[in-house]
Image 1 (cartoon, protein in one colour):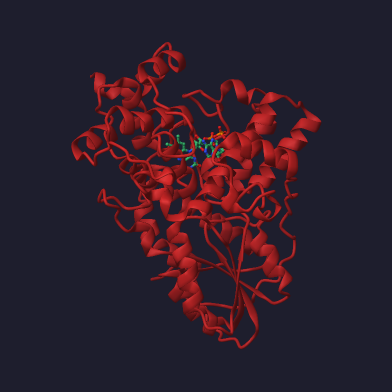
Image 2 (tube, rainbow, N blue to C red):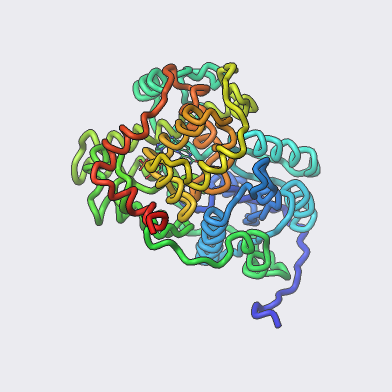
Length: 449
Ligand SMILES: Cc1cc2nc3c(=O)[nH]c(=O)nc-3n(C[C@H](O)[C@H](O)[C@H](O)COP(=O)(O)OP(=O)(O)OC[C@H]3O[C@@H](n4cnc5c(N)ncnc54)[C@H](O)[C@@H]3O)c2cc1C
């Protein structure tokens, strides 16, 4: 018997606003939520579990692997609980967003649909499909809100985004103010709809739950990553305020072992559990209350890197996924399956690369230093098509984000925004960043016995 109380479906003829939480599982500083509130109608909050998340890539792997799936599931649970605390009830549906939303317009008497907009070709296709599926009686509003800077505030059109990061950074640092984050209102006028399948039941029986699976975290993982806005805010509190790690971030950020060499905010940022502007405002508070130094600046510097890749993905669209990248360069990289497989399994014989791949496979996370090395090694040392690596990361990373992933992969494979030919000497890198071999011992120990 179902353990959840079944409720009656109530058809409504009211004018309501549907707020679709896409990959922004939070209430704090959520521009689409604020826009929905402005509409002045009851808000129907919805998450859609899209089966296309699990379609297989050319490598024969699901796009969303188990690490991200569990993180997303936990994030949705946390969002549902937060909505409940403010008097609402999250609706979770499974299906293609365009079909689910078209049906919801009738079912809930929706006159406005509000959601965040994202870069990425699949994301853009989804928006186009929704626009043609949803009846014209329902106005659709796509709201920007996952970056530190708003594109309306940039001193150039997105098509004129500088080719290289440094001129971009210098220009925006001089000319753009970050918009202050806006806290979630304590009272939200959620719809009083009732549905006959509670969110818990839909989530538990979904493909997302199946993909999330039931596995035990590897004890060597840098952090026990848990999805959700609450866990994201707790991590921020721990890293900035309790542990006071921000003041040394610039010196530690190239580390490989442990929770605090870097912020580890990426899974929460990538899945929208925390707003980059909230992180920015906490850095500013830290600078006022504790210390302002190169490290505090550097965290914002990294958030600008993130923005740069997001804007680049918006600008370049489809070209982000071409073999020659945004440069349209002729590259000598082959889709060599055998070499790729050795790399993916951490069996290349280059111990620093192998250790990093073992960490990724066992935990869904890898440091930035590691990612740069393994990407450069696959595309430049092994001469394998960089897109196989990017696609593998898409499946495996807990913090996968289309713009950051494909943009960084291209960058480290000579076809992206880097004006130089960036090839890492992995043996030298190992000496510099893992001089005592602790990192390699941690991740290669099973292959030593
Ligand atoms: C090949 C490759 C693939 C990558 N794929 C992803 C990805 O799918 N998702 C992702 O979030 N990051 C990706 N990165 C960027 C970076 O490695 C991670 O953001 C970072 O390691 C996450 O750890 P952290 O949160 O502790 O970072 P911190 O050093 O604490 O940085 C703070 C935040 O700044 C942002 N950031 C830092 N460096 C970068 C960067 N180079 N590019 C974009 N944003 C950055 C992240 O949001 C990060 O959480 C990739 C890098 C490479 C080289």
